[in-house]
Length: 269
Image (cartoon, rainbow, N blue to C red; front, side, top):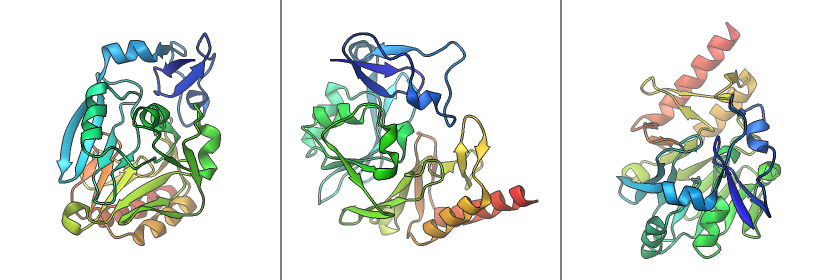
């Protein structure tokens, strides 16, 4: 079985011969098919031209990206915990060097993800690391492009991944869009990993809430209010987004509340 990777978004597809005619993730109105059309790259080809990069963001937190950039350029975040390590979000490839390094750290106990745009190589990672369980919200299972016996659906709005590490389903961007709470991060003040369920924007200390970021389709005010209420219940001081330069180092909870108020005010004015 060949594995084909969408060059536009990084999604994986399994096929006996030629790549699929379409990428269901790119066809969705939250993403887009490039002007030049859908293009694919074989897994083996990508592995020969790209590699993972690795950087420590704070104690027990590692950022893992892909160089050069492919797809939408997102990163994965590896949380090191006494109860086991957690991978938050995913990248299209896992090279041997990074795999060996992760195994030396005790491997990964579970993979969990913010939303379908970051599913990419989740099955690749799971299989390479010995069949790691992949936690996905039940609502977003229709967006899985490469199935696996290791996918574990979860229901509800909150799920304890490991002690002190919790998933919160907020919806909005996708019905199952989620964030991950790391209680002991940021010097015990709490960290929230948001992917782009909540998007950290260039304006320092601000975030945004969108149905589609590339196509600039905003979320309605009722959804932003609901998301803001849910986030207000979580204790955190720092946010890490889905890309290297997307973070708010402190007072992040206040940033989210202030940003929600601005979003609602501008849509209702």
